[in-house]
Amino acid sequence: MKRCWITDKPLEVSSMVELVTRREAGAINTFIGTVREFTEGKRTLFLQYEAYTSMAEKKLEEIAEEIDRKWPDVKIAIAHRIGRLEISDIAVIIAVSTPHRDDSFEASRYAIERMKEVVPIWKKEHWENGQEWIGNQKETKQGIPREEEIR
Amino acid sequence: MKRCWITDKPLEVSSMVELVTRREAGAINTFIGTVREFTEGKRTLFLQYEAYTSMAEKKLEEIAEEIDRKWPDVKIAIAHRIGRLEISDIAVIIAVSTPHRDDSFEASRYAIERMKEVVPIWKKEHWENGQEWIGNQKETKQGIPREEEIR
Image (cartoon, rainbow over all chains, first blue to last red; front, side, top):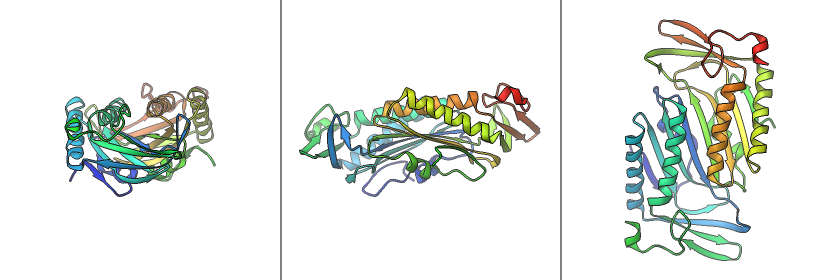
């Protein structure tokens, strides 16, 4: 079964937690990214996420492999939703289980930071006063990235 | 509605996440403590948690108030289960929502560390080869604490 995927269906935290629950784990950390209404005073009405899906899933799996190497006894699942998302909808869930809690926090944090860096998912902000494509997950670039930028 | 509580019922991550979901939040971190089978090579069969419930809930609420002060735009919920817990059962869930992800990780981490320090919950380890009361959550003391130790 896949541990990293892109979907246009709503994400559900319980099932992500179940995926990483195991007898060896004493700690599970989940990070959930939700659609926030206001960003620096600008109001979001809704968002649209698009992904280069096969590449995005490949990059997520690479992040999971990095985590396997850095935290030997870890189990991780990552899912990102695409399509139209309303305020408070869940865009991403990372779930990480480890024997001890330090590692669960660290690996979860690592996963979201790496996702922002390398996974080709972009979003269209539908602001109250217009629309804008955010070209990378770090939100430092506008516009849809060219194909060579996301490989 | 209470945001911090002790219960003898199973804990459910989805409902904890719902409690902190809101339009201002872009990030939710959850920390889930589960019953691990092996600790330093010793096998746990099951655990029993007991709490000085009214005091434990008061201490959890104090931790939530500390977090309100340290991270101004935060919403937190904390629940701890008591009674008999089997391997992989959830003992504790902390859910924290904030506008941005840094704060969600930090506040969640802070909450679990403070819980281990100040909340009068103790556990009886039912090892494969015997039983042992763990007198504090930091697991540095054995035996049930005297009443004056947990105030």
